[in-house]
Amino acid sequence: MRKRFFKISVMLFALFLHTFGVINSICYAAPIQANSTYAGIDVSKYQGYIDYAKVKASGIQVVYIKASEGTTIIDPYFRTNYDNAKSKGLKIGFYHFVRARNEEEAIKEATFFHSVIAGTSPDCRLAMDFEVFDGLGSQKINQISFAFLQKLEELTKKECVVYSDEYNARTIFSRELAKAYPLWIAEYGVSVPTSTGNWEEWIGFQYSDKGRIDGINGNVDLNKFRDGIFLSDNNVIPEPEPNPDPEPTPDPDGSNNIYYYVKRGDTLSHIALWYNTTVENLVRLNNIKNPDLIYIGQRLLISVSDDPNKSKEVKYTVRRGDTLSKIANRYGITVNEIVLLNNIKDPNLIYVGQQLRIPLDNSINQMQNVYYRVQRGDRLWRIAKRYRTTVSNIARLNGIRNPNLIFVGQILRIY
Image (tube, rainbow, N blue to C red; front, side, top):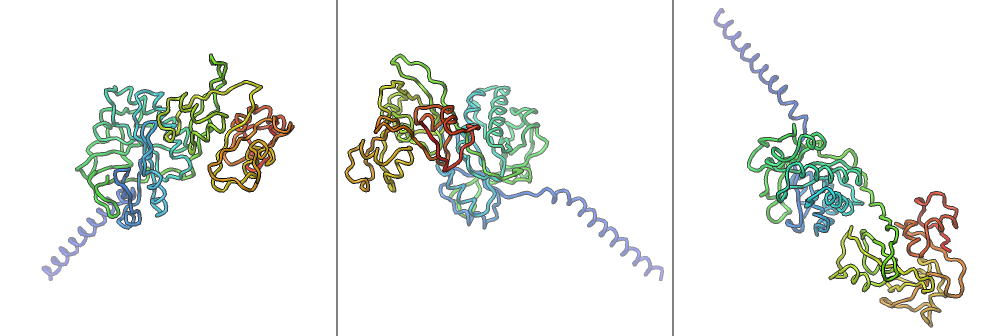
């Protein structure tokens, strides 16, 4: 009996130890499970076309997309990657490769990055990829980083993250930067980063640059992301505010110089139309080698004549779908004025590519009033520039109390 009791006691004790051990292991594992990780990749033009249905089926949840670099480069696959990945329900982030050498350049790069991603709805923090320093000291690198990130957050209203390899996180980026922005760290060949430098933890970990994922030809960077990588909201990134031209300054030839900053969708012919000039003049004044290649944020010098005796008109190239009534409505004039100025015999017959002269003042038929229907994206300063008048004059004629508030379809009296 005593032996049997002993055996039973041993068995119960063993069962207790086993149970205690399991409970212990569960208690120990719980905090790790609480901090979820998400499988991710980061992509650019080097991956080419990507089949995001296959990418998602392979278990990828987060895709970081290169948007831009410096102040002129937009990744050619940026929009395709965004549209296709978003359509498959993947979580999206954007990164910008910084080339700035000082704070002023950093602000310009942040502005450019914003202009590229405006109108999108990312799910993840906007990432600064600053890794080519070319002899810059640590203090300068951190000043540039702060300038870029602060301007970017101001413009986009979105939180940011610093992308860095383990060495730079440990030796270059400051404790102040680490307190202000979280870390997306890169270190290959390890299961966890060996160090996070001045950061206490990471929210992104790039652990390989030789990943193979179904739907992607060739290698791709592999990442793990934590909850902190996600934005507090995924509202649309606001469009850039229009950059009003500076006050004209006298020029030796008697004209005024103004500056225009290129925006999304602009072409030289469009800009020439607005400012009553020609593409040839813009090319000459700005030493442009390829008239078909201008970039967002580019500053263009425009010479505008102030000669009150000069007829105010622009050239308009007829596009597919145009009618004279549509063109007339766009410029706040009548079809008859376009017909008279261009000797058009049949107002119902115009053709694509035809050049039309469009009057912008009352030199035709002594017209007394000009009206304009507000289009999407219009601003009073832009309308005023187009018609060679002032914002205050348009506001006065139309009883507008807030010049920053006009709405699509609103009819404005210009003169």
